Amino acid sequence: MNRIRAALLGSIAAAALAACATPMAPSPPPSAGLPAPMAQLAPMGMTARPDADMQSVLDALSALGARPIETLTVEQARTQPTPADAVNRVKTMRGMPTAPDPTVIATDLTYPTAGGTQPVRVYKPAGATGPLPVVVYYHGGGWVIADLNVYDATPRSIARNLNAVVVSVEYRHGPEFKVPAAHDDANNAYQWVLANAASWGGDPARIAVAGESAGGNLALNVAIAARDRGWTVPRHVLSVYPIADADPQLPSKRENTASLPLRTATLAWFGQHALRSPADMMDPRFNLVGANLRGLPPVTIVNAQIDPLASDGETLAAALRRAGVPVERQVYDGAVHEFFSMADVVRDAYDAQQWSFGRLRTALR
Image 1 (cartoon, rainbow, N blue to C red):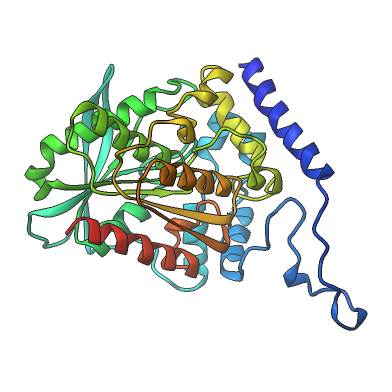
Image 2: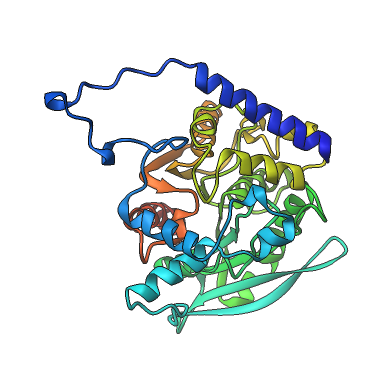
């Protein structure tokens, strides 16, 4: 474990040193010799300044006592306030309801996986009649933290906007179960959904996969497994700020050393606890840009500007295009990692959902 941490932190330190040595492009001269407005300046260690509504969520997260993940133990990281808690705090301050959307019904079930079972949550619009399209959703958390409750908002929103059955999948986490345990579980869950979707009013022939962060990586890996193993191939992949490229020198990893809730050092912390050894960083399941991507269904990639994973999305999109896969990618300026689920309080999240859900809807007709 110490060797993994040293290797990962060493890579990040090298990236930081390289960033310091890289000449900066000259800035336009300020008008009339006055300093440039503060709103135009990116804070140290961040690509840009968060938009005001995005900053309100970050302020709420700080007020709740959340600390940078890499400064915590695994147990502390799993139990500290989350971005979802911060969204609820903002809603409370604005007089908005914080209860889950009652127009979507959620049912908790389990699916079989290695050594036992794992939870899933099946979302379905109230009163909907089948057969409905199906979306299998994988949550984020670096394969170490978070769960179905932390990531409740996105699958609930997909179900409502697409009039679809959405199955949110839990999977085994490191350090107790390291990669590829999560990938194996993701594949098992997908097969289980194919076998059971009809019993929930879903149409397994109209199926897509989606995920955020580590879950965005899992979604693409499931599409690869379906292609290779003869399963029903998903019609579309929605991958939101995926972990996809092991290169520590990517621009966004060099620039976002102070961004929250995810910064470059946090990626090393996740790697320390989720991977078996530094060699896993080049496993194509982790380093998706090195995987065989040919023959995959169309992919939608969503990225936040202020996120060490922004460049992962860029290089993944380029790799998919080289492989002949139709792909569209949008980057949302002024947004940070985890923004996608915050559509009720962050305008960029609302826009990102409307754009990406529209692409899913078209694919699942």
